[in-house]
Length: 325
Ligand code: BT5
Figure 1: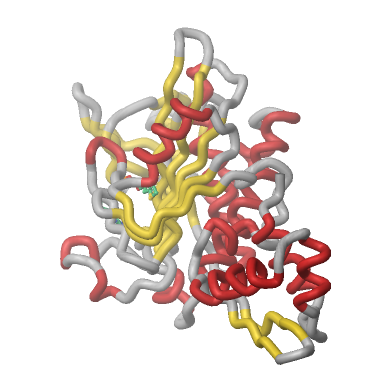
Figure 2 (figure 1 turned 120 degrees about the horizontal axis):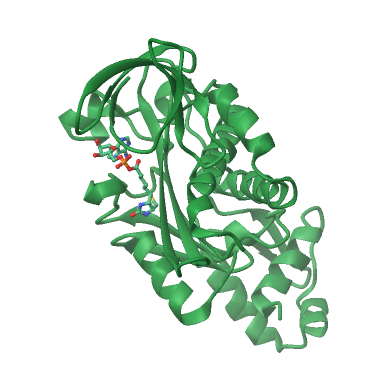
């Protein structure tokens, strides 16, 4: 059921041009005038700007830039994603919170968001720098009815949704570097994706898809070794961006992309992915345990593998190996 607080925000938001009286609010929400006043104080603490005019009523004059469960859900145009949002100002990793939530409450579509992560993680125990209030650090819990071997497709579709969000919002031209990085033509990385799965032999129990997107950092926000490789939307566009709007836009785009994938399969995702693909059609160097070889990056296969064309023209699938881009 919708909370009184949410209903109150809705009522206020419908009346931004005029005042709405305490009496009317109290009747509509079926709570006392003093309870209304307490809610108003709480909203102000959360960054809403509320004008109270004696004998006239209340009016909302500013929405908070600060992220809360409420401000994310307010105006979020999704059907099922983010209907439950868990927000933490600081956490070790949104992945950890999401796994816990998935075990306790199932929660298909639940989204965990943090302002700051102390131990943000990348793949293979690598660290992900997640400075307070400077990026989108979120994890989504999904329960797709898919066999586990198709899970890599979820990483690829997330990358497509993320690239679409970045290009739609900022007008930049992001690229997707296989399998999980978003970067720009200058080869600097602005986002990464981490897909973690709990599965039985033939069925995914749940996946947690973690997305980290650098939004408003300056180079000096990172340690030196990262500065050479990282960038943010602010660095690329010379302007700062509302993290709240980016989160909302991403969740909307992700939901559309995911629903399309569930309905029509991987074909459309593959097309879009390849249109964003970094170095498609170019020579790359691959290091496997046995050898080092050069090949042309030809695209991605439907199981998420990298398609490479070797020097004799034969196309192979590559599932692992270090790549020198
Ligand atoms: C990734 O790993 O790129 C996946 C990152 C996923 C982060 C999200 S944030 C929300 C959720 N909660 C988590 O705890 N994680 C997820 P990988 O491909 O392994 O890249 C990691 C490497 O990227 C590091 O070894 C650094 O070199 C570099 N790196 C670390 N922080 C970075 C940053 N903020 N921007 C760009 N590069 C970074």
